[in-house]
Image 1 (spheres, rainbow, N blue to C red):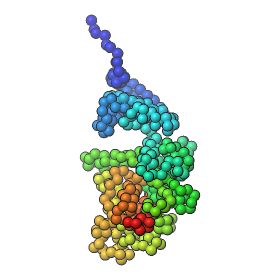
Image 2 (image 1 turned 30 degrees about the vertical axis):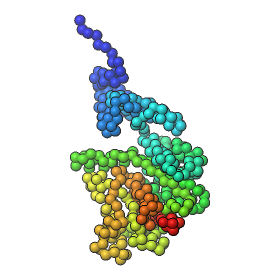
Image 3 (image 1 turned 30 degrees about the horizontal axis):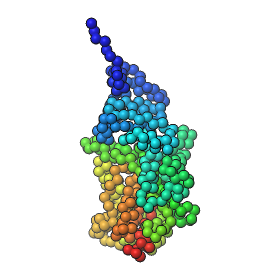
Image 4 (image 1 turned 90 degrees about the horizontal axis):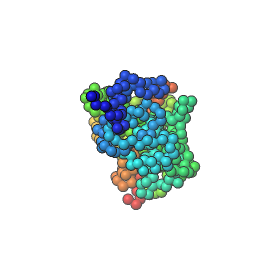
Length: 412
């Protein structure tokens, strides 16, 4: 007599049995796309392997899944369960306080979110980290927030309408803040810092925060070059940042609004024209030269990510172009180019692309050097490829000068 088969007694076992029994049949349909059981098995296995091997999660650990009714949900659910993890379902419509409570209460070690949730979450985490630092501005004192990330937020009628800045401020508890989004591709952070400085200098606001979350599209952006050369995908970071711009308290570095470099419509597109607009001209207005800047921060992409993809060593190329400008202006001779790059540049170290890699990664180091170190003056430059938007063939660029506070210098 044939032994009667017992039905699956766990969700994992139910999934595994369904994959075998219904492999060719449709499992889920959403927005005109159908996922069959065979595809669900393959995708969920890959996702489960990522959770275990990529993130290092151990069986029994909790994974929050914050997704609407999309095909990604069953893939995430089945993948986590097949990996031996515990799934914590999170309502995408939760308020910030509800989300914060559930994540803390469940002890989730990771969260699966939709793209717009990802850029909001990474920006909010950066802001909350900023507010938690000793001596930081109080959340209630933040009155304006500028988001400068590259992600667009909106619906099908207003694809980039925003306002992510205010949504992040809400989640971080900045109840008295308002804000807006600034979009300028990789140049966004420099535009935002310039505007924040102007808002504070004008007296309109005392405390402004500039922030940005990570861009999901930047993950593995150069992956084809990495795989071609048999190396791992090194652009594996979804980063965010937050910076507080406030009134001069006599210690923090000073943002020189009289030395803003800008690539104007009529500036020209040749490398020499661009560096003159972003470096020589603003420094000259302040009575300075390139040799008065201790450190230049520009596009800081890690060459380990860009060289295999054929993009070269982006920071080194730009630093050498800047040194060549110093030669043209007779500040150094041609033999001094390498020494200029070593003394005033730095290796690229940002493991991601876009606005996060554009000068911003050095900001924290510069603040330490200008307050407690030996730096007297630094210069930050962001450049944006506006032609990617198919609206113009122009590039964009903004540069900023940060200096040691005169009050700090007097007491040093």
